[in-house]
Length: 473
Image (tube, rainbow, N blue to C red):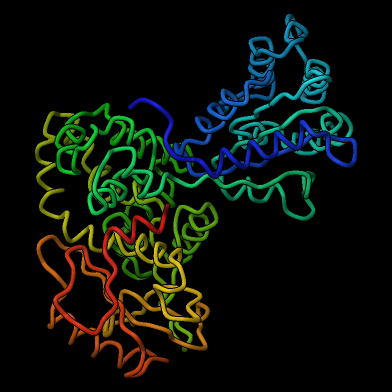
């Protein structure tokens, strides 16, 4: 796929920061810093490369690569500096600094004083892993030297928890950088890239997770089934390799966290069922693994939304692509490697409708939360779901003034994401019964339906695929 699609907001943010560097600022110290974070393979580096290309200013782009020692990373840094288009890049030639302090001082000397430039430190958590003192060194050099130069420093990392912590109180770089989160491409971006109608764009988002690497190999206008028919039998396709690479980077195959992710991928969401699916994992081990996974933003812990507190926490894989990969691809890689991707594809086709019905729920809740005030009832501040231990009731959509314990329930709703089957009178009767069991709701609580194929029932507000995708524009 040619061209660069989406990321208008992120490009505008970076351009605004570079404009501030150009203007010099009010303090006479024009240097600015950005801490950019986002999930692996979400396109952070590609975004920055596109920004630098459009900005047309001198830059150096260094990518750490988990080398075994700080010395090895330093050699890569010097190489990146020597190969950059900084006006004084030749200053890096033949240099062999033994510390990051010396390497960064060399960088300061190479950065021009009379024009703006960009310095990119990609995969910064790898540098910190080999040299824990790097944070403090970077802070010192930034305060004394880099902030006095017309330079935009962009620090990128895929370890969401670590990158977020870098700007916290008590850390060396606290309040010195603008935080920037790069999300996956949205369902609207996916639809634009692939030229798909709204419903099929959402399907493509559930498979790709909005990852540019996967979308890049997706044929223009192809449905999910058409794409999977090509990608699943191919062991080298981005669809297959991206999930394994993302997991291997943070969770080795023998780790407890990887085992828990696999259990979640099988469809289990309740604590006790996850433990059982993970081979009877002891509760202490499971708790540690879930704590790690939620800290790394790989898993979301969600609770029922109502006016009463609940301990019925459920756990969801945060990344839609990883959710798909763990359910349908990861457990069957050996099957695909021996040339039987047809079996994997048939399994996906058999389970697709049921899997999609659950996987689309967090996407729809997120979209509803983005919609203008005339779509949801007044006072709706959060959209979630409600369930009990026995799933009686289980309500797909609950609107409330706040969460997780609401003062007021503003709506109850249902999601019906099926082809050629509209929300009907039977579905409506079930929703009315479930609303009566929702703490904080009553017969006057408005009802909302999100349906892929419309509704045959009057008296409920209806949201369709076009509105869901439109919420992301």
